[in-house]
Image (cartoon, rainbow, N blue to C red; front, side, top):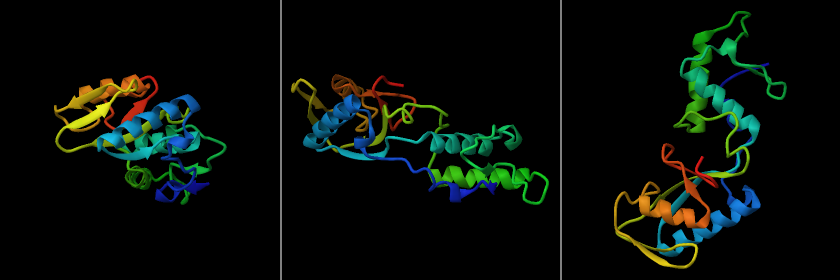
Length: 183
């Protein structure tokens, strides 16, 4: 088994492409992205599909970095990782926590990742949206809207309402997260 650490982050790569979403949600996201582009908004996509193995590594690295005892992490046959850092024979909790923190930093994790999520089911996209001044955007039916309120980001309530017309819903407690049902 190989000790945990940042070398695991490049394994089981995820995607930041809308092409890797489920077909119906992919169409919804593309239409919303097109409307945002036409309106002059800036969009940065961080993540779409996340393989279950990547989700597992992200979840447990976060948990260990935030206090979970590495000895309590369940073993997964497809990922031969040594969370406890037992190379010297005995567990090394300090090395385990340091390695987990390095993984969290390298993954760029800001919020506790779930083991199974809409990302592993191809039903979510993490993206940051912003614009300057006012945003002139059309909803899914083609009706024009002017967004002159703040914030000028994906947390704007007017934008969230417009996104919903496309079938793209915002999870408010996770700033970059959008999905097909708001979870």
